Image (cartoon, rainbow, N blue to C red; front, side):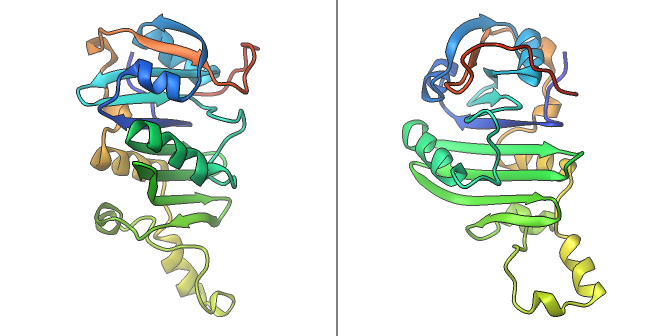
Length: 211
């Protein structure tokens, strides 16, 4: 079983155990499962929390909190900031190629340091200055609120769109900040992780989604 990363979202938490992360996410119906089982379930429903590499715990799920949660929604900055108050450094990554939705964010000890989201041809979230990694990769460096945008030429729009990310750039940012989950060899992950449902999911209804 290989890693995950495409058509999904995940958290990367530095130096915390799966149990600490699962409790901070208030997961219920928790059960210990192996990497293959947890990854497959999280692509369909719920969240799988595991430590596939030393120093980082990943919480993978196509749906976080609330059930339709994503980085374009108003609660996102407060949600991530609140998690970081409990867990320290918390990173968020997401991508959906069909809707062209790509996001990343990093919070530390209750402070949102950087958050970027691109979706539906817009940049609805742009908090903090672009990091050195974004600048080097040439992605996520420009926001949605820019002066004289209504007067831009085709060349101006082309230059702006060249800074918007693809799913591969989400993986590249993740790899520089913490871990690119697509590179994880599931066969080497021997420790069990925790699968559970967040508070807004009272029961497993068997929702499915494409991988």
